[in-house]
Image 1: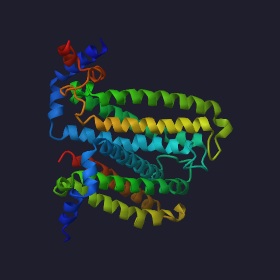
Image 2 (image 1 turned 120 degrees about the horizontal axis):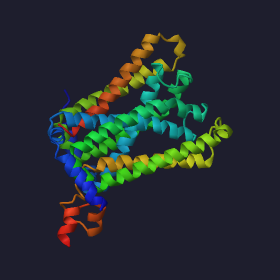
Image 3 (image 1 turned 90 degrees about the vertical axis):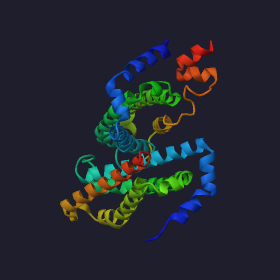
Image 4 (image 1 turned 45 degrees about the vertical axis):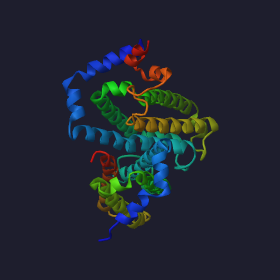
Length: 191
Length: 159
């Protein structure tokens, strides 16, 4: 049901002439993808610095909350640019992307990273007064920072792997992989 | 001019190339390391340079920001170079004839030279003793260089 709905939405987006033009453009698609990668330096770069502070690796003489607060804005700008360029990339190739196992994994990891960031911030705000000046923050903060780095590493690798066609719907795949990728037509053909 | 074709020919038939071509998963993992190191290097450069421009971490002395970002830069650069050599081995001959690859290599060389021969020695001094215009120019040049290197890297795949 969900797969059918997602495929319908992707097919509708794919029917737009702008989607085709963007996909087939000589430079526009390449520039958007370049922007998407470059925003990694801004968004992920800032996030890595904040997480490394929470792990007690860098800026150990600067209060942890101060590092986080001062890098929040550039990180948010980077995230917005990354999201906008990511949506444009999706719009250019909606059907294949919707049916990519890697894209689905990336979205799941993004959600997990978002939830972790939200919990992390809430935990940090609640307790920061007691450890803000500690060179190495408490274990639960370090665990959240480590998890954040791992989740974002997962987002990066799954994002990069979307380009590979190893598990695309046109390949002969096991049923469960067709399910995971949302290969609606291939599943229908098998039944 | 030195002809690097023999080096690329050797790389193309090396054990590294065989491993990079045979194991897609390993290649993807190394590519992830390359991207993460790029993000780390970018973060370290951007935070330092944006601080010199007075745009971020203005409550923290710029000397502290620069000192804290130097080690991360060095480690990220090392990972970028090592993972880059591994990835290059898989498509060595293709890269030899790719203009964007050479643009990236030239940019990377200038970037490393600029960082270790200009930016770092300059910023090791007390920043209040440096002309603010020199500081800002250094920051802008540094950001331009590294963003260009990253952009050229992405364009290798498009050219």
